[in-house]
Image 1: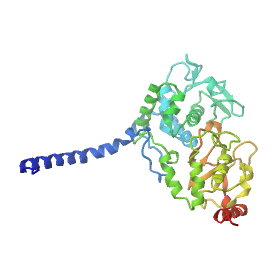
Image 2: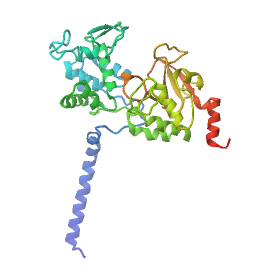
Image 3: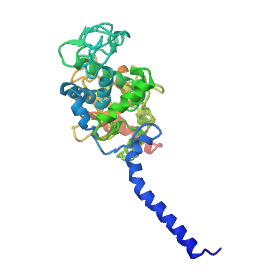
Image 4: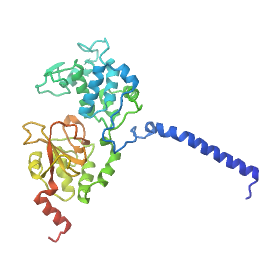
Length: 364
């Protein structure tokens, strides 16, 4: 069918108009894309080793300086977005400035207390507990004074960070907030405050917490064998910690590493205490994916007898099953941990070298 010049001109003009609209609108779509992602997350720069959200002008003017530093300090320490912590503090008590019952003393009608509004039962049974005491709850000593005080901002904010981490943050902030206060309108309000407090206007997911960064980690593995170890280990993300667990539904810190090596056809010791002397020691800065990183943490441990271990997945990042109250198995940063003992390379143990030879040549 032949087109008249007038009709052709009309079609070309319409196409041009559509192209112009696309050019004008697409940058706006790109800018607002994070809010349209199906899982509520945002795009992540996997090469960004910090991705710490900057403070917006509204946050700087609204949050007391003491509180802002505590949100940032304990958010970084525990691995929770500081602006989510700050948003909870704002929504609950206006960063401790509220004069309502239960903020500076006593409890409110629901039994909540302190600037982060913990139920006393959730805190640990009493408002003030010696830090050395054994208790079930989120009572924390955030300023090192020996007391876990629900009314002390340093203690309460640290406890809130632990609770959010235990229930899904930083990966699943909405789930963590819903557990904090079981109402979706509350979750929406806190997220909106957190966006206002962030200079970017979004709630960022740290790159080590994003599954979008798993494939690049596996692809960057120094060998196919290490890739198999990482692939299995990363697939356990989101599963719960269980002391003594070796899978498939739950693991402890050394158990998930033992299982990851086993999935690659290798057998290494089962426990942290036996994994530490097994691998060849690696100097800090020379560690690589597949190595183990150890920490002086847990009962009966020391610098010569570390009680916690993680699997290095890239420089600065490890997969770990940390503890029952620390949230699910996840990828976190090991560089900020001041109780780090050292690194080992199980793949250079003589027994493992022989196992690798057999894998490569089964006839041996």
